[in-house]
Length: 178
Ligand code: 5GP
Image 1: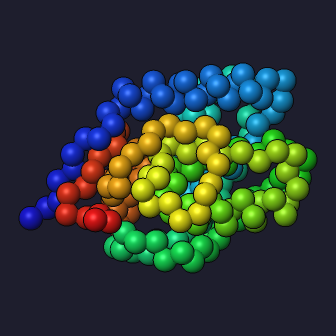
Image 2: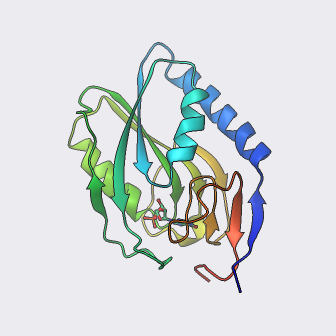
């Protein structure tokens, strides 16, 4: 039987929260240029909406990271850079844009990695956080929603590369971490 997707956060709620995050970022970085570093693949939808909600000069670069492989939904804890940034970030206000912080291992790795490149500031915007599964503490400066320990898809998030195009965030029945 094909898996079913149950809506967890609808498109209107996402749009409203992303709008508020953009307004907050606009206030916090007033007078500065922000370099959004979007973590591929899952954050491509979030960064597209967030960037348009920020009323400041913005640059966007993309970084490919992988910690999950294929059909599995458990993190391996091993993070690989599959695509590096196309430009240096030295002296820039870098805001990492991530879809979801789960165990925190991916973001802990990325913070360590980017800090060595000497940005002027380094912060994190994450659409979702699953605190139940945290293994490393990660400071999320701009958070969309805190969610329960469910495997979610949609709005950029995938299961085996599918469901990224759903306009809402849903729970995939039959896949998950329970
Ligand atoms: P972490 O290193 O924090 O455990 O994992 C972060 C990455 O795991 C996310 O960027 C995302 O790719 C993946 N991930 C964690 N939880 C989920 C989930 O519920 N759904 C999907 N689609 N990916 C997840």
